[in-house]
Image 1: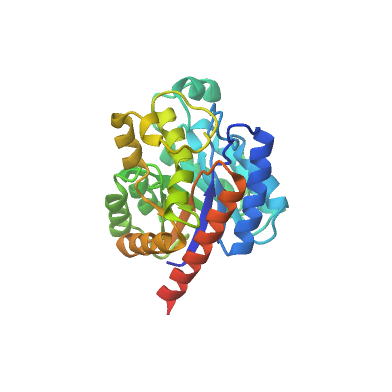
Image 2: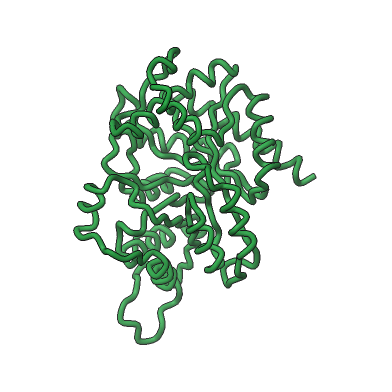
Length: 334
């Protein structure tokens, strides 16, 4: 494993505002930078009361201004919601302002419900143009061809690194075909993780971007002083995911001691499966579970994420995770 990184969904806890959530995101990015995380990514979601990062490029710029060295990016931008030129201009501007620090992860899903998707796009194209849109976007980051009719300014010549995100074989196949780095969303959709990584690695085409495959996987983390405390803190995310699955999204709930009584068994089974790629517990437990995860999947990079209602507890969780991952990285390198 070459690096470990952090994905922040800028959660809005119950009792807090979106302004609080965005301030918390800045504080978390600063902790991530100080703790040795390689990159800090934010994700595009819409019409979700519990997530404040809808205007992802703007939030990335805000975080970039409050940090100095950590790589920042989108994990990801949902490309079907946007014209490739607009995304190229946004991320070309970020790269111009913060050179050498910006990543662009691209997803194929809308990142919202279909009614909101229609509101975002104005019209719903009947065909899937994602591969063509990815290529068009990458081309905008190249130096402009002489006489080009359409140019991304800022954007052209910035060569912003582009990643393909996915939770199925589709993204793995596309990333391999284009020779791009690949990130798998195993923190909430782990079913195809092993197959997707195997497909990506087996079918990878070397490119001007990468000579060999580079795969990142995402995993949940909730670390605390004891296993019991970590399990308690994690109930916030479990409740939030259950409510989302049952069509009742809201702000990030406060943790509870009786989560079994609040999530019906058939919903709980789906929640547990979706959030199964995770390390939850004390420092020792998280270390053991992270080590097993890395040994099993052999990621080039591990990106951790986790939503905890209490901001201080969330900072502490990611600080513990950073210490553990730094130790595991050093042990692998030795």
